[in-house]
Picture (cartoon, one colour):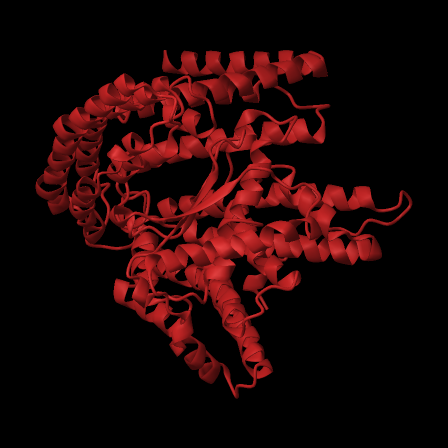
Amino acid sequence: MRFYTLAASTLLFTTLSLAAQTTSVADRLAAQNKLFEESWQTNLKLSPTLATSVGDYRYNDQLGEYTLASVAKRHDINVAYLARIKAISPAGFSDQDLLSHDLFLRNLKENLDDYDLKDYEMPLSSSGGGGGIHTGVADLPLSMPFDTVKHYEDYIARLHQIPRAFLQTEEVLKIGVKDHLVPVRFIAEKVPSQCAGVVAANPFFIPIKKFPASFSEADKKRLTEEITNTVNNEIFPAYKQFSAFVTNDYIPYTRTALSVESLPGGKRRYQAALHRFTTTDLTAPQIHEIGLKEVDRIEAEMAVLAKANGYKDLATFRDHVESDPKYVPSSEQSIVDDFARYIARMQPKLIELFTVIPKAPVTVEAIPDFQKAAATHYQTGTPDGKRPGRVSVAVSDYGKRSFINDEAVAYHEGVPGHHMQLSIQQTLTGLPEFRKHGGNSAYTEGWGLYAEQLGKEIGFYEDPGSDYGRLRSELFRAVRLVVDTGIHDMGWSREQVVDYMRKSHAIDEPTIQAETDRYISGPGQACSYKLGQLKIRELRERAQQQLGPAFNIRTFHDEILSGGSLPLNLLDARVDRWIKSQLPANAAVPVGVSTLANRVTH
């Protein structure tokens, strides 16, 4: 009976495929676009907070499900979508429609691989420093609209669902314990104190401090009472209960081995993470070697900078810059102000680097204390610009931090980095929605790191310390290749990681501690920055070499950004097509050769 079922399934798929190949291009393209739209609408319905983030407020009164049943439901939907996209032949499609076909197929296959590895059973290890449901829902007051009474009522409806979300997460964590899929102990041990931090900071009251002037006094009073009662009587008890669960019923079962390869699935698990985040097939040893070579190259550039500024060597220059009191923040707000200043000065310069300039606004804010383990990061606004993008800046232990890296990181997170790239992506025309709002870390973070260099190219980094910070920021991303693979493939201890990063002088002490936990907690993602940047640099060098005087940096950047977030191999192919289109009709087209993998050889 089993053989008959498999044979019948194979026959059905073959029949569908043959039928698809005999239909017209227009009909097959219509079927593909219908599938894309159906998938997108399903994602919005199943992920209400995603819908909110892209400006679709139909599900604003819902929080979503956190159960294993909901994960299985998504998996079944993905299996069905995979069969449907495979049954659509892309023969005759335009380059852009073929690209959408391949991306949709690739995304589904990766989702199915992830499901098989059951990473979803470790929801507290998906982000560094013990992130998870407890920090995620605490961001609701900052990530929802509050323009109407209905928006406030939606917010209250979501608040009521937070206790249920915690209980569902607990059930998933229990299954993870049974399957031996648990995070490293000291990561889980951060959760109770973070829960206490959320309760103490109480971000849930933020909306009642900023009622629109148009609200009646009666509405203000009613909404204030409902939010206050819900937070005090439902949310705070839920946080305390979840903290107790993690302390008593979860932490004792967490693992002591740092490497993700110590979990079921071994090396396959880490290689899958590297593939997902870097979109390459590079192995851990290859990535490790690329990191070591990049560290050497960047330190050589730093030595040149030191001598150009009158210092005998890098060590002397570095000691001067890193001990200069002018680079020590005087307050948390001084760090926020520094970031805002650099982003503001870059805005009018964008026209020198791009022809398409996004109109979406961006704000700069401090990461709240209860999330202080998080690194500086960017969160997208809505496509219509009504909710701005947000650069959230790490400010904890400000006296131990430094202004040195601020300029580079401001360009990375703001403009021309993440805010620029993601704002453009959200408003691209002629692409399915999943390409406007999805993506991969290698492209997104690779662009962010590449963007740091653009400030240098238009005349910024005038201060020698800030220019040193630019190189130090790049060095930091090279160091990540070394330590991430060191932890998860070579058995490095936490002490080895901390020691290596200290000796690199790439980041300050608070960042070293937070980043080490991040790499342990979320394997592979840290490798995406440098590999993505190297690919974009490689493509630029190829375009400059092949186009010669016809090369235009503005149109090159537009081409990189106008296709949305692409896996590196597809980005490579896209740029090759663009180079060909820029050449005279009778010109010979050199074959583009990827040098990324070659960096691990001689």
